[in-house]
Image (tube, rainbow, N blue to C red):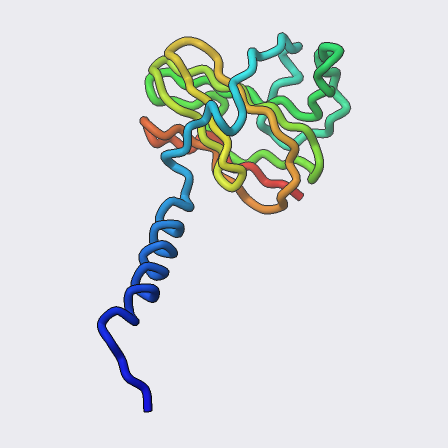
Length: 157
């Protein structure tokens, strides 16, 4: 025979509340981007090397500093009057490539790379960057949080 007392449900209720709270914070939209990957200044690149179209990584890349590994893929986006340049599309990179995304916006905003939970502050008129190793395969949206613009979809294969 089992006897239930009101106090025996407390641990179960606490566990449910804890799991719910953890699941609710999983999106990462309120993450502080300065903790994930601080913004790094963009490197000067030849006009043809910054692109969002799927291309081979055979184009010349800027020479990295002694402490920074060479970036395999640099993606540059500009936002002006809510228009995205180059226009929204898909960018394909290989799994394991070192990717740098640099965004310049005419209004203050926040860059976010979904799936990797990376972000950078975008002060108006100042480029913000994230750099990461594309170690997860799939399709990931890259967007701004304040203006809610989808900049492009990152495809990692």
